[in-house]
Length: 164
Image (cartoon, rainbow, N blue to C red; front, side, top):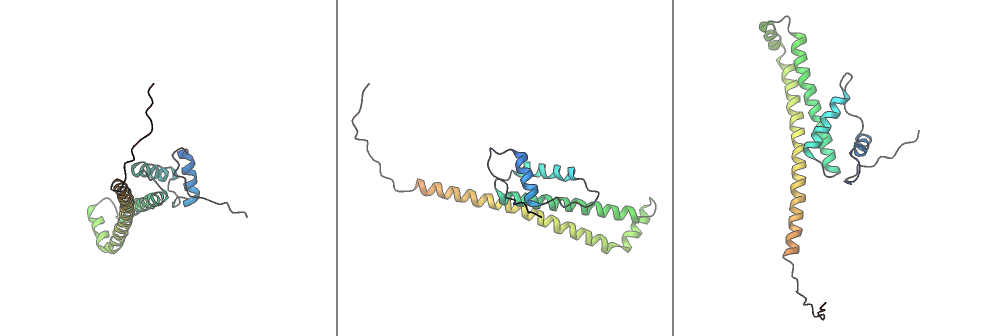
């Protein structure tokens, strides 16, 4: 089987966004969806996060994908937690749900811990985007300052003046 070479998405602003999205899907692989999860919902989340973050280079594209994947995982774990309660609480009584929770608090705690860890990883990804941008911005400011503080000599224009 012949393998297709996949290159990172372009940061060229003239490139059509749908071309970059196709390249991103090839580069990053398929969305991390379980059976029954909706690809359109995942893609919609990715599109909204991308619009909010507005990644400017491949590093930011990677962090956006990580943040989207982790957000999706967080939503999945929250649904799992609700499904555990719904499946194991006999009847509609609060008493039955409380009894189930008392016996299975360790399971709920583990799911909560998984949610907290995924949230921490997602938030770290978003902080990396901020840090990356701050470092880039600082580098740009430093370059401008170096240029402004450079020793420049004013060269007089001694060419003959022409009058029209």
